[in-house]
Length: 125
Length: 125
DNA sequence: CCGATACTTAAGTACATGCTTAAGTATTCG
DNA sequence: CGAATACTTAAGCATGTACTTAAGTATCGG
Image 1: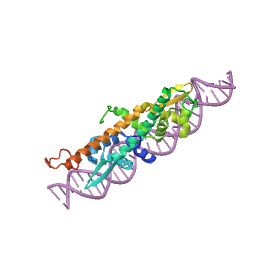
Image 2: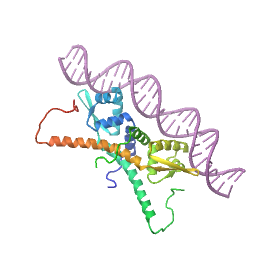
Image 3: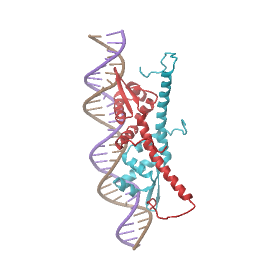
Image 4: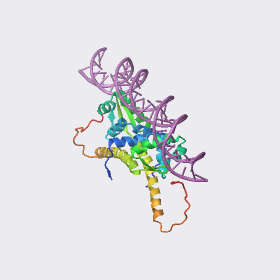
């Protein structure tokens, strides 16, 4: 279970983290995780103007975190969990890289036969 | 495997996402996932000044994503994967909430006995 | 058709952020 | 000790961001 998807492009990762950096947008993601919502509903929930919500939705949409669709006069926003998953993957990749390293280090320190003393990489220069 | 850790406080989540929102800081996290590094090494890698690295490190440290320790005249930065894990958890929580909902919806649509037609919540108002 | 509803768009503004240069301070080493 | 190394701190600045208000444009309901 080391890697089951290719990394998103750096630009996509950047857009995703940028979108999630704002507390209002995270609240929107949180709300949308429970199902689609209209612009007005999001504005009421966050107690900001409709205009502000529209701006946030643009950021979320261009990151791929949500899609919106207008039916009649109401625009409904829907969460795209695939985008959430790729943020998760970016983080998990780094965490796992660290943990692999930590395991190797542990194995090395536990090894009963201290052999080649050449330091392969810097570290504590 | 629905939940194996309490959520981090909103303030912590905010600090974490804010820290990860910047591409330079994400590069630092990426580098640190392969092991500790000095300020100079990070500055060389990112081709920015030492001063800029110090500023980024402050943000990363106050978010809990890295710890630093000064030995002699060199400061070494180390990644804290526990912090990475709590960002992962925040995202996974929302994704799972969505997926649970999706499953319920699927089960409902598959159910052979269409019963109470009262709409419990808004959604497609 | 006309008022209410639900956005949409355009400015404007206050504030945060990322970076740089410049001038320190603390350590190491010959 | 004195030069080199490795940060550290303080300004300053150019941009980006999140809001707001204000003035539209499209539906919808009666």
